[in-house]
Amino acid sequence: MKPLKKAIITLAGCGILWGSFSSGTQAHWLFQDIDNVTWAQNSIINAYQMQVVDGVSEDRFDPESSVTWAQFVKMIVMTDNPAYRPGAPSEQWWEPYVNEAQKSKGFVDGSLSKEALDRPITRLDIARIVARLLDTSLRFKEVDEAKAASIAKDAGILQGRSGGDLALKEKVTRAESAVIIDRLFEKNGKYGKRFDTAAVKADQGTVSVGGLALGQSRAQVKAVLGTPFFQGEDEVNNNPMEMYKNFIVIYMDDQVKEVTYKAADAELYAGKKALTGAAVFQGLDTTYYYFQSTGDLLAADARSVRLGKADKYFTGSVQAGDVKPINDLAKKIRF
Image 1 (cartoon, rainbow, N blue to C red):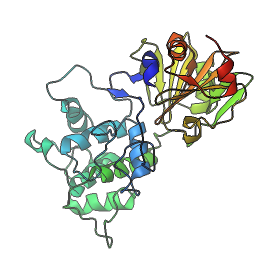
Image 2: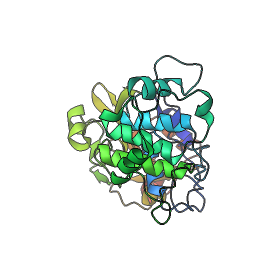
Image 3: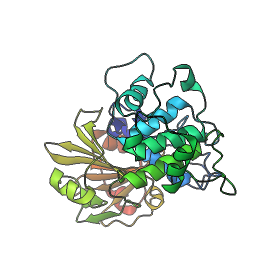
């Protein structure tokens, strides 16, 4: 959504930008380098939507590289409590997560040293962490190899690589870590309600995405989505914001101001979605569906679908020729 820079959502305190990119020839919509790990693609996407994993760059995940202790400790803290955010700034990015996992929660052995945090974590290390996460009686305690492996395997969190071998001494890849996190989320129920499609509809100029429409109350949103995993403020205007696995909802005066669906919709992005009353425009990397009667504006890029009101950034982009009309209705509109 580059033409609408102010309308792009930045997630408060998280450093994550729901921008757009050119997806090229990849089979999915998120990272260009996860086509060869089809067994992990959905898990990577799920964990990314929950802000537990991120790419090494905007379009690369580097699925085969190893995961360090520090990286996995952050993942496990965020999986246990998706609303967790570090407090005061620390000298090292990992410090608050290690303190939370080690001193507050007891997921990690107290003997873990600072020097070890940059080392690759093994499957046995993860099995021990998982055992403590799932069995609260084991927290702040030593967990032997057999017990850790048994708990992690029986819970379906850690599975064999080949021939049933858990390969406990082996390092863990980024793809494998995403699968482990995905399984833990499935087990702890913190994904909440899941929405596999944007389910966009238009009725007399009013647009809904997954049953959410502009102007709805918090109670109406809760009836559709349930409980958010995080509440805070958006970085653009400091408006109240709620995060769900598949959605970000921003409010103004306790009414929905903006909705973002955190996945691609190929039909919308291609400008082929039939929505009654929609004037369709195409920008460099975003397709817009504008509803003149209500001012609703649906913007679809290669990673997300955003619903908001048309503003001067949209109309100005049309006037400047950066965003071009596609269908007959759009060609008739003058701003």
